[in-house]
Amino acid sequence: MAEVAEIKSMELVPEAFITEKVREIADIVGDGTAINALSGGVDSSVVTMLGHRALKTKLKTYFINNGLMRKNEPQQIAGLFKQFGVDVKIVDAEKQFFQALKGITDPEEKREAITQTFYKDVFGKLVRDSGAKYLLQGTILTDIDETIAGIKRQHNVFEQLGIDPQEAFGYKIIEPVVQLRKDGVRKVGQALGLPASVFNRMPFPGPALSARVIGEATPQRIETVRMATSIVEEELFATKAFQYMAILHQDKVTGMRNNKRDFGNQIEIRCWDSVDARIATPTQLSHEMLVKLAHRMVTEVPGVVSVTYNMTPKPPSTMEAV
Ligand code: XMP
Image (cartoon, rainbow, N blue to C red; front, side, top):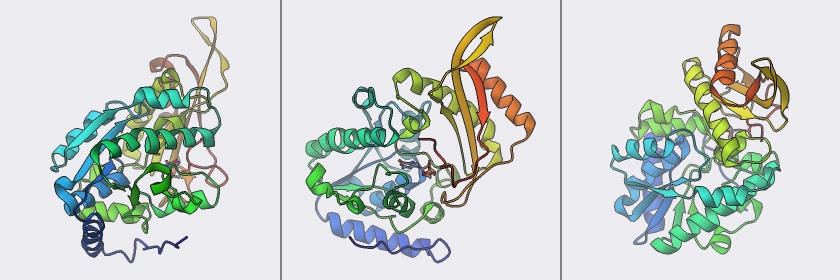
């Protein structure tokens, strides 16, 4: 297994990096075609722009709607990239993902179900239909580190686990930003001319909202965490924290509403200060903000009776709960 040579953000010369990667992608793909999945996160956005520069119409970009994304995300992202000249096709695959997640409660099994559905079923079909030989994807060095260390198997890491994508899925994977960490990818995004709303976008995990649901990710439980996420993102945007999220717990607790017992859901809020996601500390939110968040959760998200704020740094916590 080839060791990946890290390019530290401090040493990175974004313009030179872009020129080199655009050339590399063009050389590898040659006369063929490539496809990529854009989620709208900084990694896949940067890879989309690098691929677009290198391949123009020889790159087909898809937004896979797995049913696990945030409110209005598919349309927003496709609309935004249209402005940069990139035609993004939305692929509706909600049913396939929920079917694959049915009955699964173990975090790593959930990741595996998403990996298989994404790479084998949904992408496999797209590749077969399009005749593309290559998939461009935004794996970064932290994904590989955490997978190798056995902390969390990131959904997009294969080679380091001894999996040959060509054999397993029928296509090769090109990873133009694999030598970078998040801060480096942001620099490249800025140099590519992406707006700050994209290159400074908060990280969001590949398994999307299923990583924010402890226990089974059913359509209904995903909808609960989607509503909670929308509130957290609205309220905490101004903090400029590295990442903030809402998590739906598996255990229910006794609450009360209108003088009646209400056995309901618990939402945990996390808000992180971090540079590169390797270590992180909870942001010191004001008591007023915490009260406001709790109030909005119990009044706007049906079935929520308890709201907590995580106070544990990473490590020993991880940033996501799943
Ligand atoms: P953890 O939870 O491992 O998260 O402390 C570190 C950073 O990685 C993101 N994350 C993921 N990203 N696939 C991804 O693409 C995943 O499976 C995954 N799990 C966590 C997380 O949001 C945080 O920014």
